[in-house]
Amino acid sequence: MSRENLSKTYSFPLALSSTDESQKMKRGAIVSLDTFTWQMLASVFWPGSFIRCVVNATSTALALGHIDGDIAKALPTVVGLAAIPFIVKPIDNTIDTAMEMSVSKALNGKIEGPADAGIALGVIGACLVVPPTLFSVAAAIKDVAA
Image 1 (cartoon, rainbow, N blue to C red):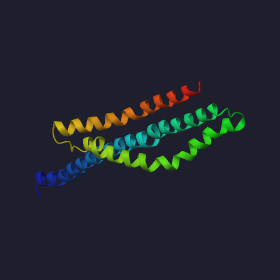
Image 2 (image 1 turned 120 degrees about the vertical axis):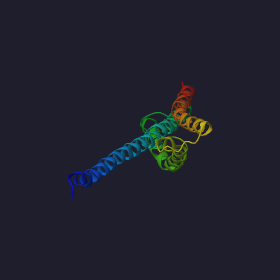
Image 3 (image 1 turned 180 degrees about the vertical axis):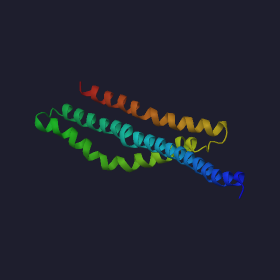
Image 4 (image 1 turned 135 degrees about the horizontal axis):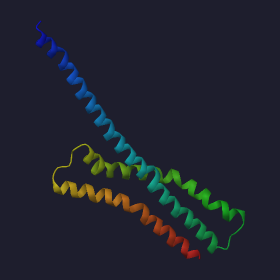
């Protein structure tokens, strides 16, 4: 085997290997960003804002009912925690659908034209507006008792 052919024989698998590693790193970054975005929306931002509404509604109901003492201090937290099993699945399903229509689609290069990009931006924008909107609702609920 000539030196040139020997060189090609060894450099070709190395080139494939580095391309393969590059693709793995790129795919890993995409999956990580997709997962991080989903976790922040479905496990932090949305549930926190929903639970704040529940806690503030409970506190307001207790205040309007002139209920105070230890129960009035503990009950809003208990009700907020009790709400978690009821909000998990609807939030997860909503965020799954929203991610498929926006972030996941963009990260995987599946946006097909300006209309598709507009939908993706609108969907992720709506997802990002929900938590501050609910925090405003929670504040308004709290103001009712004041």
